[in-house]
Image (cartoon, rainbow, N blue to C red; front, side, top):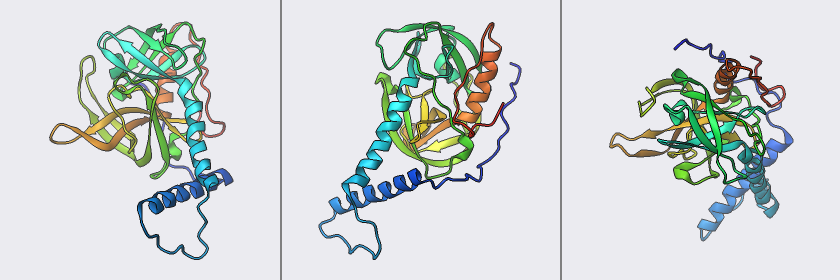
Length: 284
């Protein structure tokens, strides 16, 4: 397989304007939520330090609103993918019906079915291309009605501690959402071979505590701003063979978008129309 050029790793940016009023509001709301939880679990609470912000229902509502708004933004862009050998998830890539997913979700299939979040009727899809070294693939549906292209953010801006949501179809439970944080960035992990997939060594993955279960692969890892910053791909496995809770890995959006664009560009008569967060995604 000819090697596709990967987007250059730019590393974390200086993140100008990171602490925007919205971000500070979320931080305050997060602090308030932690305080509410701690107060509810203890019979006697320690005295509040001088100058500490009071816990208010408005602060809790602000954080809850950020979660629900992000889910409403991203969920219509996440689909379920069914093949003869299993199921997984995908993210609507552009307005032409292209969907990015993991190569191991597609396996050896050249035709599959797609179910979006707004309809229970499956749509026929065909394979556009696969790039095994990064475990990425693109499929396409001809009926684009009801599909909303995702907004892809700049994964180079992620740092440990950022809140993220994993959205997909674990175990066939459609439109499921789990939450966690970015645990680390730039992890290199090995993915075992499976039916239709030779396995791969994935560099620069995002480690997250958001639960990733079978069926989540190929879905969306998103921020509270509603931007897709990764493609959940695999969960860690303990030495005893069981899943290691709270340790999952996602392919960064900058890599996924770069590879998907090349796969789409090689398809006959294809156009690439990918919405990205303005000013945040590197050209290419």
